[in-house]
Image (cartoon, rainbow, N blue to C red):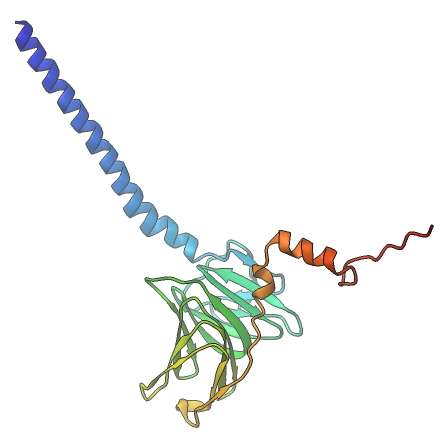
Length: 232
């Protein structure tokens, strides 16, 4: 009887352990497939940071202020204020403009510049590089900083760091690296490549708070610092 009871208890313990493992595995799969595919997707389509004055429109007419937490639906229009510096970030993408710029959210990690000039920084994403539509051309950026501009049919780009792939309407692809620029007109005509120094406006934002404090104390005449003179 004792041996039979032990066998029953042993089998019950094994069954209980199997149930616990199955429960843990089910919880893991739920977290992976639900939160990774839905909750994280919601976050990636959400504005993380932005300055005041930027506006968003779902239909191109009803413009409203863009706020941190705003959802970026496909085909939503974004425009920045005139004569002011503006900044926004979402899903590993940062954009900075110094004047009126209009662009459209073309999908997940995808934008289309309509007019103006904007600096774009993209974090490395092995699954989905940033796609930028510029006129009839397509840019793929992954871990690079670039300047894109469009004025009517005239388009231009400049690479501040990293490298991008530029695909023209005729399907020719050009690999552009740091300090290279390209200009062209409608339909990809008159493409011109050049070598020019391109400034990275995001560089100061990458300096740590400790380093910025050191710089302020090393140069007391920087804007915002006060030079104190003590008379004996």
